[in-house]
Image (cartoon, rainbow, N blue to C red; front, side, top):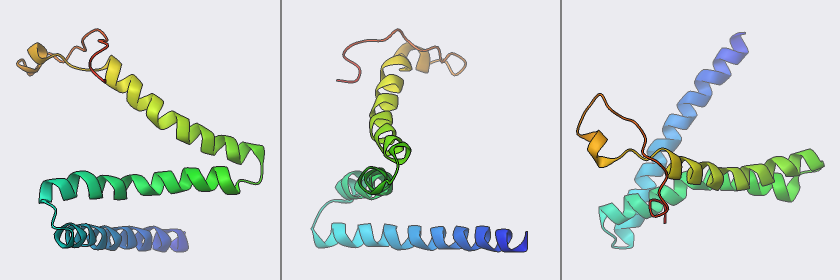
Amino acid sequence: MALTLFLFLGSAVLIYLSCKFFVNGVEWVGARLNVSQTATGTILAAFGTALPESVVTFVAIAFGTTPAEREIGVGAAMGGPLVLNASCSRSKVSRQNLSSPTSCAPTPPRSDVCD
């Protein structure tokens, strides 16, 4: 139990420090490339936050030793865009509903929302 707690707390500290270094690194790269802060946050930070998920998917597909491991990688690669598409097309809240804080009913799916 003590080892598990130690590993949990150590991992939390490691994640925190990694985030600090990542944000500082992204800011530095943006400044070196002479890119605005908005573009830096939009492009570089988005790339950096999506990279771990992409690497895990690639490793599962490329280095999986069993069919089940490879199927998990394929499922992760296909599942992300499918979930994004489904959530984008089915749960958009209309602008009329945003004016009322108590009403958040989703609108019917529209074909032009996610294009």
